[in-house]
Length: 206
Image (cartoon, rainbow, N blue to C red; front, side):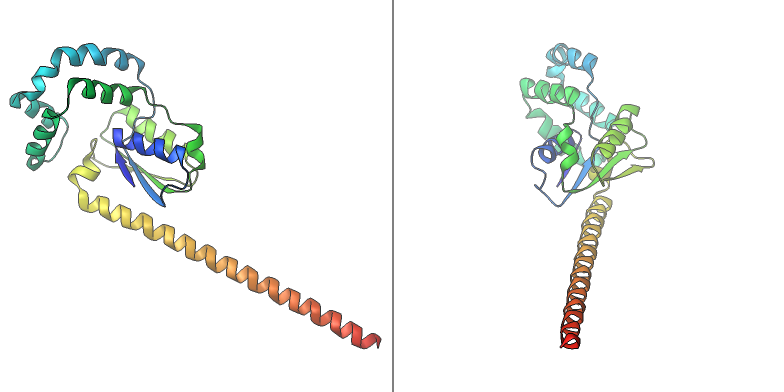
């Protein structure tokens, strides 16, 4: 499973509620530090500016600020125009006040936490907090990457990261399976030797 930004927060919530929901997960640029001041400003700000979203010139300005590939503008404009004002406000409020749960530390998933080094300091700090909360997780700070750069602008690298995460998990499972088999074999060998010693001792006594 993978999640970017608000989607990353949703994935964090899923992992915290069901610790065996998936084998592997990539958390990309998820905010884990509540922004109280921002939360209070969202409703009045969007109430005044929401009408601009349908204006293509305004949407192009927003799109450019997000550093998304130019060939994706049509999809971006189409999808943002479909979002109602109340839904937009709800998304932004949920994003700004989200806090990770203590139960997240019990997830059994192999987790990769990703953030770009061109992102805001609060995003990089959030990535560190998530990494520390999830036992056995890995963290990557991608050089010269902005918010969403990894999965949106570089999908091939994103797929490679997924494949690497799955491959590492499979190697660890095989290693554990081998160790368990080896331990079982050693225990059986010790039991056999113990029985042989007992039988030999019995025969000697006779």
